[in-house]
Each structure stands twice: as structure tokens, then as C-alpha cells.
Length: 311
Image: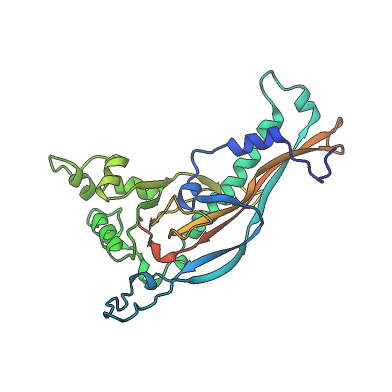
């Protein structure tokens, strides 16, 4: 018998490790950097980019000594937080399940889906928050400047923003409503059309290439914003905004490659089950799944935020 209060089930853990919800983009916006942490508390570095662009005196006299430079950063403490949920499955459900259907596996997947949706909202609230960005790296669009207006200039806005950033961004994060307006914008369509037409719909890859990006990441997820017990009120997790970000997929917890933000993960996702004798006539099984993570903005200068990009 396991000595842990909530024994981990290898089969269920395998399910939640492999399980992916294709509608969620948090892992593409703030990637999980490896290797996984071996402790929940950790330290990370925030770097001053001025040290990388300040040119010292490099000339060396015939018998002189070269000037010395020193690179460093601010070491900060952080710790991962635990996120998980339980689902109680009656024994009768397990016994009466049709062939090929495992209620415990389904429960673990459903629980993990909600845990990941919560992560999606945390990342969206962090990335689509003007307070995350330096004063020079954000603007609020309104009226004819919004990309939902034919008189606006989204190409110029994005080019001007990237020209002012200390490192070129390589991804553009959009909510679904913003992407729908952007791909139909007459200046986008005409830039991609050989005939100069201003009506139509541009493809994702064509707009990505036009804006000289590695990827345009579109948030599609929905979330119920109503309190428990109230009528359902659905809203897009990613709002009507846009963010240009520098994402380095080669960044790890062991190197110093600059990236706008990252997710630090402790160990792996876990799932387990334990008897729940008080639930149901024949008892039940409590299924738990979750993970320990911390989302951090490690270089806010490597992002640019367009608030209210569309009306």
C-alpha cells in the first residue's frame, strides 16, 4: 500500500500527461521551459538589456590592458503553485460502463481540461494586461485607429511597434475577434492580392509572412464568467487585443536566452485515485489530477501590447 495520502495512479498520470486540448494556446505563448524543476521553490534571472547595447571603449593600447565588462542580472525568488481538481466517480458508474469506456480515465481528462483552462485564463490575463508592459511598449487603439475600421493601418502599427523594440518580436498573439478583423482588413487583403482587391479573407500563413513573424497565435477558448449557480455567461478567454512577443523556444531554466515570458513547471502532471466510501450506496472513487506551475514575465521589454485592437 502506498505511503502517500493520495496515491498516484501511473495509468491515470499517463493520461493527463499526454492529454492536450487543441483550443488552448498558453503553452505556445508562455512555453514550459525544461528541464522540469526538482523543487517547488526556484530562482530566476531578470536581465538589464542596456548592458548588451552599451558600447564600452574597446581600443587597446600597444601595452595597455583591455577594459573589463561585467554581465549580470537581478536574481529573483519564485515558487510554483499547485493547481488541481477532484471528481468523484460512483462505483456503479464504473461497473455499468459500456465496453471500451473507462469513467476514471474520462474523469481524469475532464479534470485536467478544467485545470488547463484555468491556466489559459491566467496566461491571457497576464499577457493581455497593459500593466505587464513598459510605458513605451503599449498603446490603446480607439475609433478609426482600431483594426476593425477600414481607415486604420494594422500593418504600419505592427511594423512601427517592432521597430521600437529592443529585440524583434517573432509571434503575434491575438484573440479570435481580433484575428477575424485583421484577416479581412482591406489593407491586409490588398497587400496580398495580385489584383489589388480590398475584399476577401487572407490566410493565416500569408499574414504571418507579410508581417515577418514566425507564428500568429490565435486564442479560441471560451470561459463561463458567471458565478457558480448563476446563468451561463460565455466569453472568449482572449479578448479583443493583440500582443507582439519575442518567444525563444530554446530558452531553458539553465540558460540565459532572452524571452518575453515562460512557464516554470515542478515535476510532471499527476493523477491518482482513492476510495470515497461515503459517496453513493456502493461507494465511489475520488479522481484527482493537476500540476505545479508558475507563469512569469521574464523580459517585459520583449513585448508590445495593443489594447482594444478591434472594437
